[in-house]
Length: 72
Image (cartoon, rainbow, N blue to C red):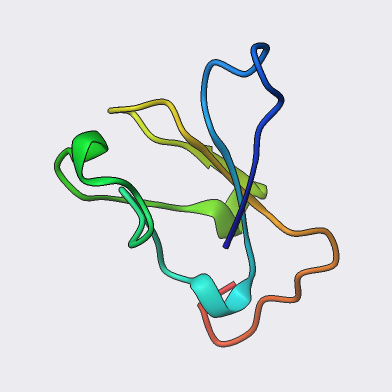
């Protein structure tokens, strides 16, 4: 997982994920303790991205990610 934010313009975190990160859930293991909320699983495989309903972080598949064995 990699995080990409633009200083002072991003209001929510953008987290790029690969096939090795599936299933995707938020908060992710690298999230700071202060940002914890109930864990929610996000389906990025269907549309290529998903937004957490709690914190607004956007999880997006890395360009060129090939999904296999995840029912898609």
